[in-house]
Image (cartoon, rainbow, N blue to C red; front, side, top):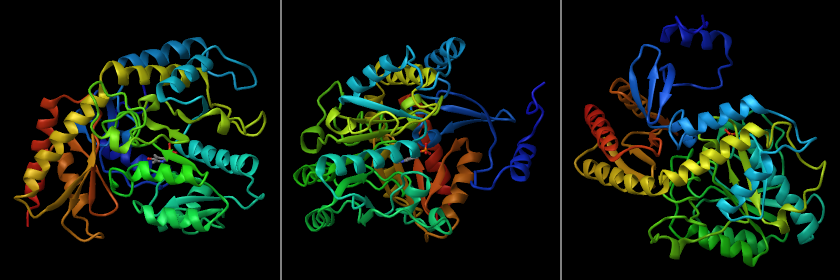
Length: 427
Ligand SMILES: *Cc1c(COP(=O)(O)O)cnc(C)c1O
């Protein structure tokens, strides 16, 4: 008998509390099963998942095709390390590079590792291709960024919880305001040694801050002009989440013409993917770039024991195929528009919520209370009681990001739950 079979929620929480490091503050719900847009707790209560593991589960929980690809590969060959070739990696790299429109892919496992890879890649490119003097390369980042948890990445965070007492910090980063083209232009004009501009097309963790429609395109143009790599962290926004294949809208594979595409099309020099690259089944991340950039990395200069392992390749290939076959880009765009319309109609009559923002099915509702209030948390507890799981990001903002396999009927059901719950908190 499995050790967890007889546990109640309270017992499972007590175990984590006693034996696990306290590096998270989870909503008190203990999940034991997932399928599509639903998860179930250990007592058997069913919920809509409106976090999707921070947009890792875009394809829905335990997608049968992805799970099957994982099982079949796991039964055949799981890990060779890159000391040898395996018969899965090359085919996956061919598929993924053509899918996203790049020459090459460098496989890693977690998002933070892929961001680290992009940082190392752009620094090396700056020294070897751009002629920046050694140790002088700078990377421009945005305030309120979230790019992961390694020592270097938290060095350029401005979240005190993420940073404090983890120094000394890695130098070489210049922070500018997000969605501020002039700030970017000023730094690019006044600094000679810039390797890259690392940016999230929408700042998910910060509260789904959605920049001007043309921010990415103009940023890319400025980077090109100044011979600086435009590095898009699409770990949360990519792979159909925002109603485009990528939130920068490069290589948008929409079936119908994408009206945003003309004005907003941007193609990153370096693309960082993670999370939904595996549909949440397995840790798979990747950095994509063209040869002129990627070729600066030579044998022995970067790597990972598990990066590019056969299971990862099989899972990621299937996860990307599912996105296409099930038209998740189109579904996310269509349902996102309905979601924001319905919530906006409610906000017009309400004083508990002030704003809904986002693209596709990456949205946030701003709660009408101070940043340090517990109202957003209390609303998430009430949403849980009403059968829907969401989590506050940064105080009074609630992110709503369900799996993209949701139907319109399910979405309308969820909108009703959200509005009913918000009404309980009306002032
Ligand atoms: C989640 C996330 C990361 C870090 O990914 P991990 O797999 O948690 O290391 C980096 N950037 C963005 C934008 C993310 O959302």
